[in-house]
Image 1 (tube, rainbow, N blue to C red):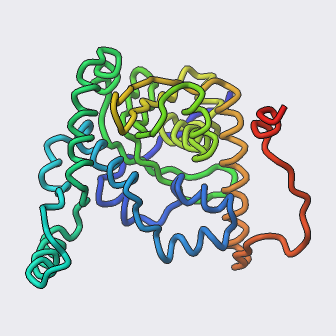
Image 2 (image 1 turned 90 degrees about the horizontal axis):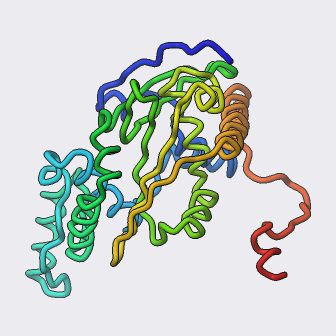
Image 3 (image 1 turned 180 degrees about the vertical axis):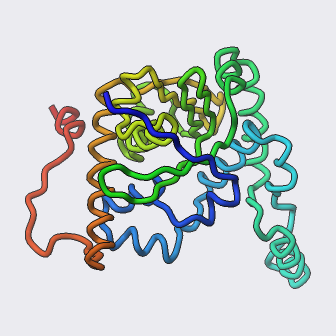
Length: 276
């Protein structure tokens, strides 16, 4: 087992301004270094699902900031001249805030009510500090890294992430984990929180990565999952591959996209099993 180092706590503003690798960038790197560089130049526009996710996170983790950071779209007829002026005034006043629809606001309230009824979720939410920003250095590449953790309980060695999803069932959410590389995030966050150079070393040291999965439509189901050892190991491999690829791209100033050759393509294992 490696010897943990001491991660550096960052304030909220520093996290967003410091030049360092985060888990979102690593996911882009796995697509290609060219895509990652483009992401840094032009961050992706938030989807409606992302906007709702931000609202839910704020409501559950920073409720005191909800009114100042989240704004609901009023009834405006943008097809009329007056409506266009009203919309322009609204967007100008909402600059820098997360804009959600009335239905998303309703969903956010319903999610809050559902979470409030879960003793297990409330214990977890109240077990640690919220929105903790950490800076650290990757041991292998020397790259500066950063992580913003939803809930961190250092005494209990517990890292928690809240995810909004269309399907929080074990079958459905496991697919979301694979699709959105949540296991990469788990490994990366465990490294940041624990000071270990690998997520699996943190796991063996007693650290746990838990996801609270919250459905965004009725009945707003809530499920709690923790990654097993194999998932953390797979996440470690992805983190290492992405960090190495990004380090080399920066070192040689070569940000390639896909291989310039014919590649053999197969179907994912789950698709083959379904066909059988």
